Image (cartoon, rainbow, N blue to C red):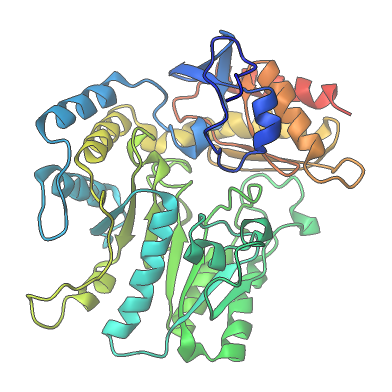
Length: 442
């Protein structure tokens, strides 16, 4: 076993890290050892401003004692109980609480353990919905280029990021993809939703004509695409996509794993943007990242399509060992209490003007070719260095970390999504640090 190059840190060999250049990281590890509020503490005892809410996850800020205590109480009372042909009270309580903040009509909740599992669940629910209604032809799923829907086989099949599926075979059959909305000239440095690109949603009609509209089960998109580099939906785009799905007769799935639970100034993007899907995938902020958990919200009509036939039969042959885990639900209820009490479901709308102002001030910084924002989400796109995609972005990431700010980069795009407790002083500090990092790299 190789000792860690970081003093007083554990050996790093055994952990095969996700989405990480393992050899490079383990040669010079960056370890986060504690957290409170807006800040992490690094292994070398530095305060690190969290510009990413962990991974779009810690919306209520770090170290919330209320969540810690709720989990401890629940583990002492009931550490685990199955939800296959059994139940436990807190899973039902949490589902009711989530339904109370969801858009009207989305009052059926299926628990998962991650965003990837929420996507798999929604895709299966969509396919089974048509089958339950006697329409066995609708088996085709439509994703979008540059889309990210987790890392399970369904998610990488409807997803549109080639690196996530290049070495894993052909994926699910019968999948096609809408064009992405990135790179339109009229949208550069747009503030909020950009003006151009609604017409790209009409490509669904072309795809339907190619395959037959009667074969399409569902379309899945992120209202705001995060992992691919913060792509904001053009004005009218989601409305046109909803209309196209209605023309075709298929379901529309919103992957709200990053936008759910307050990121855009409402509990969900569907409320903030005024477009209703049929299924909503969530995870991450559902319990502030305290324990693995996700949830799929279904319109009542989708759920009720399954509730036919003899009542002694299982309606949906799907689920997970830890669906509705007691401790994860306890963390979720405590999180919802905090979010409601502190106004965090809508706080992004209040903070968005200052966030937008400081973000767009960086458009004149070195290497910046575009800036994008919506709610408390920001993207800063950089020119690639000598055609080597990601090299400059990674250097900015390191410089920012060394200067005391955690940001996320995807290729040469800086993606920002801070905890919703952020104050204007934190926003100023974050963008001052990023600006300095941009000036420090070539």
